[in-house]
Length: 318
Image (tube, rainbow, N blue to C red):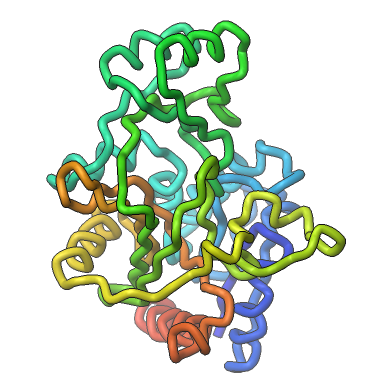
């Protein structure tokens, strides 16, 4: 099989890459940290898997986000079939787009105002009410998200220039959702449930990363800087749960509407309405750590099986 894999974090795809290799697949590895390409010369592959997060990992130049988006669009122009191509990739980038997508599907999601100027934040806050959160439009791992409980608190932050609108200077002023204390994530692979997990929320943090390497007990002495934003508190251990059929169907509709082949959707249980409140879409699988033990199967192997089947259907070289 002739398959290219686009990836970003230096270690989070290691197990997946080894699984591809153990299945006899010779991958063309494309680490976007080293991505440059000649747009006048076509690629030497016709099928690719995109596993890049729009939010660059710690220490990565933020322009890699936009270089990757250019590259994905160029690949599609050159006739390459991509699992989670440019449209899905962009949907995973834009919190504003996601908020609109959830609303269009008639799903409960936080009220929000998209802004790009700090001076518009206070006016937006008046329409949302307090408490609220401000989050970068392009973000991940809870980076840059802050809660404000009063107008005065927010005004002080705006005037002092401490509000973070992320790498492209755009963000959301968003309703704060009172929840049951858990973050829920449902992942879809193709048209089927991949797995569903939840994590207990921790005060003063907005990161609930379930990626390979996260949610593990790391001592201060051996803590890897790559996991600075990960939920390492043992109280936030990942747990499985059985998502009901209605929620699974809703998540599948989100994945399809984002023109994605697979991905994960996160939601809170809104205690005011008793309904799931959808707030985030990721166009990739996080691959929970110790998946075989936690899920009863290898998520990497199931993912590779899906890619092999998809490649055979869509590429003459598979």
